[in-house]
Image 1 (cartoon, helix red, strand yellow):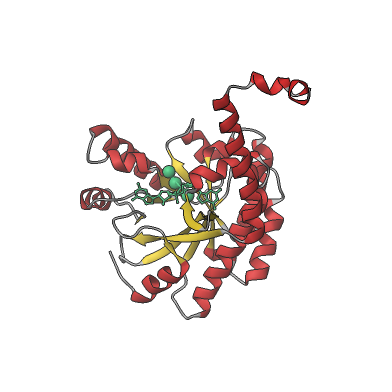
Image 2 (image 1 turned 90 degrees about the vertical axis):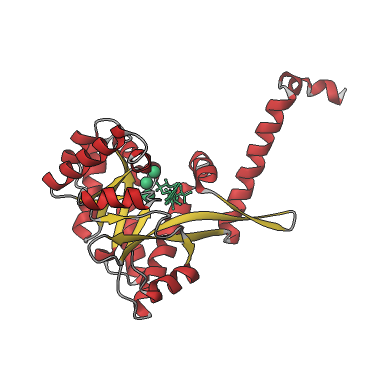
Length: 282
Ligand code: C2E
Ligand code: CA
Ligand code: CA
Ligand code: CA
């Protein structure tokens, strides 16, 4: 009788059931991950092509998931969409901001040359919660000077409610924080956004950098983005630089900074400390 009473379960195919079950399991694991402190930050250097030195690091989230007594490292592309979906991204994002600012402040206290700290903000994090108050709090707590913090945002953020978003961006800039437009060129109407939104830097998306040496169109796009950013007085950084050939082209076109496996992959804080101490240059 009991089986009959739950008969509606039968409408789900076993495959769907398993997928839904897995998602539920991962959602629960993610809730626990936040409480148990299973998230970690990796840091990837951003390098000046003029001096060759590291001028910044981007903080990138990882999930050190413990399952069946084993650890694995989960990519943010897998869990960030789920965190967004279950409404935990604001909290996780605040953790990222605090952890990264504490680390950057610690590097300065160790006597390392101060560098920029780039932190990714998800659209929802920016729109929903009071991001300005969060940033003020975290800067205060960590003691990091606002001039060292850069927030990376994507164009998708600017779709709706842009008046409120633009207002928040101006408030962040008033604090002395800088803003960079991530994955530049992949969204819609990038050009008009550049004029309407108070950003300091554009990050040329990895896909264009990859196309630099494999397809002629890529080089044209990168060249126009660099020309445009110069005209608008914006700084530019190319992401996903993997080869000497890509580097050579970017240098030749006057790109100021690069980030990518060619110089260094993202590393945990301890390894990044060693790299910063080494004063390695490109
Ligand atoms: P993103 O912001 O575009 O970050 C750059 C991604 O490219 C990183 O992937 C980085 O590891 C990878 N990468 C760097 N250099 C190279 C290269 O030379 N070649 C290739 N193939 N890849 C390279 P990752 O760490 O897996 O992060 C993926 C995305 O997840 C990020 O893309 C960002 O959108 C998101 N993300 C990561 N951490 C956070 C976070 O704390 N908050 C938010 N909101 N999003 C985050
Ligand atoms: Ca980014
Ligand atoms: Ca990016
Ligand atoms: Ca990208």
